[in-house]
Length: 253
Image (cartoon, rainbow, N blue to C red; front, side, top):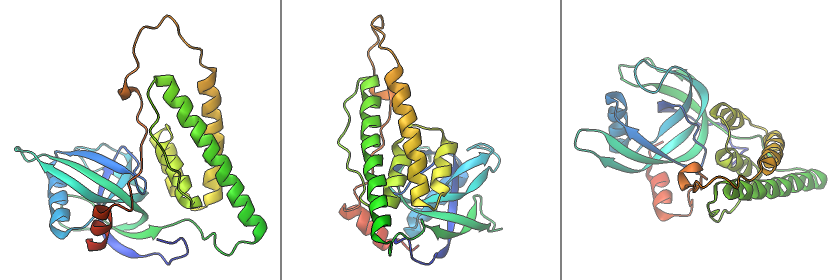
């Protein structure tokens, strides 16, 4: 969706979690609560997505949690139904949204009236502003590449090949998704609608993290072998994949 499009309004079932989902990244879920089993089953029946929102107050299970207002649409890519009714689910992040209101419906899960959320338009900039954008993106890519290499070196795992997005909005959301930071900090970046402001904040974070990681001395006395579980470097969805295109095209929202 282009950043200069008018917001689109629609209803969306909501799944509050202690994680932040970003566009073009995957999410794996273990669905065991009855209300969310019902929600996912209905989404599957309608070929419709749901929304992932970070929990502000409360827990994932039990009493309804209070979520933040900005989240990300999740499109179901695969579901494995277990014998006892639980589900293992893989979903892919699509567009961002802002919750305008919650429906008072007789459903066991939250439903929101939402609008699409995009960064402010960057088209129509003069030559100097375009050059500033390109310089900012180049600097951010260099820092992110260095950060990921240092991070991978510290835990002793090979860094997978990473291709950075060419658009400024998607680059900022990409960095927010792969950087190792608390969920609340990721939420702040998800909520931003200024592409330049987001990248500037991420540049500062990446520089600080690189310096901190590089300042940690090697421990020659440690015999422990680093494991792949020590770090998770998220990789984006291949948006050219035929299954992703078909699911987006067939979805009713």
